[in-house]
Length: 205
Image 1 (spheres, helix red, strand yellow):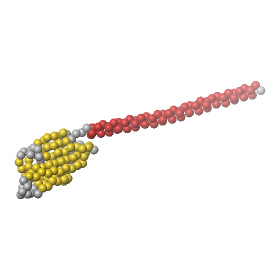
Image 2 (tube, one colour; image 1 turned 90 degrees about the vertical axis):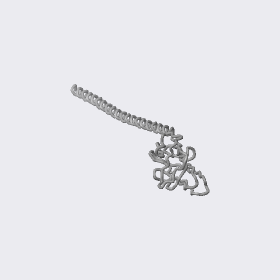
Image 3 (cartoon, one colour; image 1 turned 180 degrees about the vertical axis):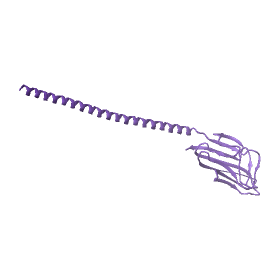
Image 4 (cartoon, rainbow, N blue to C red; image 1 turned 60 degrees about the vertical axis):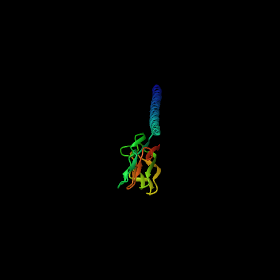
């Protein structure tokens, strides 16, 4: 009888110890699972923060670039200079406007007569001439090797002087060149005030 009681007590105690051990393992498993879930959520938050910082940096860089572009000033005006006829020549000749009046951005070269775009954008160009009436006038505004617009006037025995001009908006990439070419057998009158070439940046791209 006493042995049976002892066996019963031992059995009950064994069950209690086993139950406690199982409860402890369950709590440990739940704790590990919660920790893993928290770690995963933390990694997600860290990635979101990194993405947010990257987007913020990109946004700030874009704003800085737009501000830099909006403050770019490019403009020039130059005249041929001299006081006499230029041409006519047997071949087409790029007019060199040697008297520089304005050259902000240093895009125009008085040595070559060529404007080189320092930044991409939309530009506005004008060119005017004064000439005698005894020879043909034919001037073209060129972008690289492409003719954009022209000025022409025929020769006349009774027309002693001519004046004319033209203008164009031109889209340029950085490094594109714009210049005025006097076609073969054409001429203009060199002057510091009348035969001019001008341009400016309207809006950067």
